[in-house]
Length: 112
Image (tube, rainbow, N blue to C red; front, side):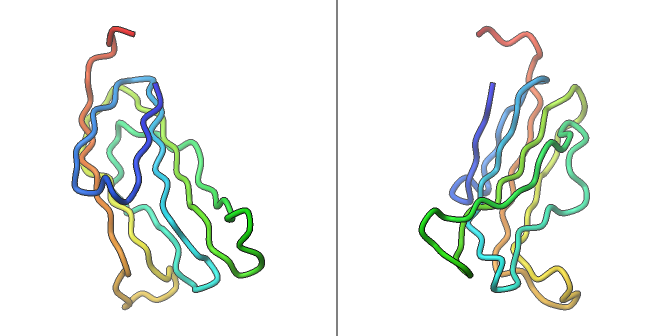
């Protein structure tokens, strides 16, 4: 099963089961220097699959788009998944935005 989340889902919990794919899609404009970064401490139940930027179709050079992260759920402990919109090189800078999702692990034998 694929579970999709956006910034609008921040603060909520999500149940994933082993084998599920979790996709988080967040608005981003890398030309501003700000990009989404995954905090250390990703729940061990999420194994990273992908991290890529999709430019908006008609945005042109310097335009925005969507950052997409994907993880595969595995049998392990849940926890908090935190992503921050920041300038990675600015160690003292505060993030413009932070999203947090509670990750809960369900049973592997979910009925389809």
